[in-house]
Length: 89
Image (tube, rainbow, N blue to C red; front, side, top):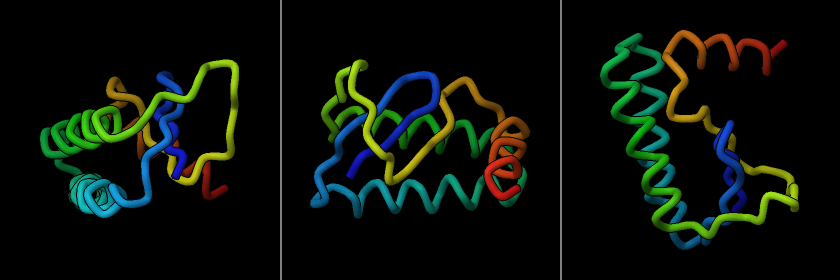
C-alpha cells in the first residue's frame, strides 16, 4: 500500500502491516471528530512514526497513486479539517 504524508513524500507499507496503521488511523479519526487538538497531534505523530518505521520511502522522483493520504506532522486539527473539506468538494 502506498501512503502519502503531505509535505514529506510517499512510503510503501507492506499489506501485512496495514492492520497496525488502520488502528492508528481510527484513533486519529476519533481525535479529529472530537475536536481534541492534543489527542489529534499525538495520534498524527504516532501514525507518521509507524508508517516511517514499517514502510519504505518511495524515491522523490517517483509519484505513485496513493492508497492513503495523511497530513504532515505540522498540520493542525483545523487545517486538517479544511483539507478534508476541500477533498469532499
